[in-house]
Image 1 (cartoon, rainbow, N blue to C red):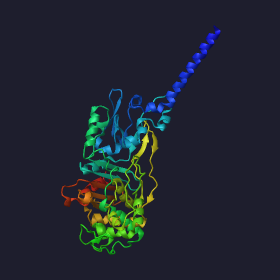
Image 2 (cartoon, rainbow, N blue to C red):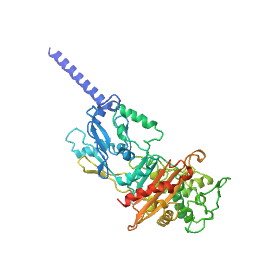
Image 3 (tube, one colour):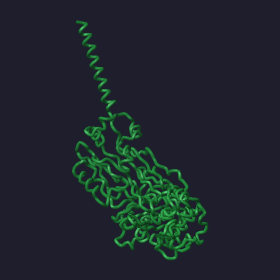
Image 4 (cartoon, helix red, strand yellow):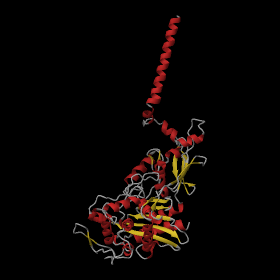
Length: 483
């Protein structure tokens, strides 16, 4: 009898060990597979079981959470959704997250390790979601959004001395709240937004690259001055009009008169293609590419904290292609944020500050858990060249094609651009304007702006950066200078 009891006890111990081993196998060895299984709703139930932290603009939340009473309890809400969609992105129970909602998801959802440590680790519950405080200025964002007025395009505005992003607008936009839930409303909104030919969910400010057109002449002029190809802003440049592209029979012409042998100052103020095409060839592909890269072209690692599309200047070109690339055509491409960085570099004495969008993150009690300081600057051009570039850009606004950007009691520098694109340049041109502004009583510029408008007018002859994009830039700069 005792022997049978011992055998039974041993057998029970073996069964218990087998159960423990199997439980460990399921909970440890296969945990990842079960967690990632679409049939496992536990993760979603936990994720949406408490309110999400908020994204703040100007100290005020532009997001929120709504208690639905359903199994996936809390659903994301957005105040002024279309205005801030390029900043917040969306947080959808069905389609995931984008932009700040994605880049700062750990903080907003309460899963960031630092939040758990600050919560004390006394319970096994998830700590409340933290908040994300942005660098966006609400008045500047509003001015940019109203300036575009629903036209396809984008605006990016920076603080030159720090890299803080003051505005990031893409148009047309959409309301992220339409995608928040997981019902038929969200499914229908997703299908409609993705089928819309205007692509409202495309963040044109950071994820779309455009030919920058004549705004790229800021880079070409800086390269020519740094390389010593030009030493006097008012000396003739020995540039013919028209200019025959090297090695071809193609003649490059100008929209403006008086470009033959124009000085750099005159050519910059009136945007002479022939002068800058020749300057780019004289500087050479290697030096042109090095200067462009100094401004940020070619950087595939830029994050603000979400990723930014890479702006490009091709160093592997022949001389004819280099001539076109140097006036922002051929395959030169840039995001509006990159062109704002170009203007900011001029305004900041030749130094480029990497842009950033998050000022700090906080826990549910408002205590700062991480903050962003201005990142180390890199030099795009010498200080002397930057001073000359400020002089050239100021002349565009006072004497040249950018007069619509002038602001009373402020020094404004700018550069217009009209970028051809499409097969045989048959598509409607893009209107560009890049600029910076400095109050008369201050020692350094306070804002740098880039504006691009894709569908400015039905009449090609009326599309100019100075006529269409410059007034938008002026409104954005005024919102910074006159809060």
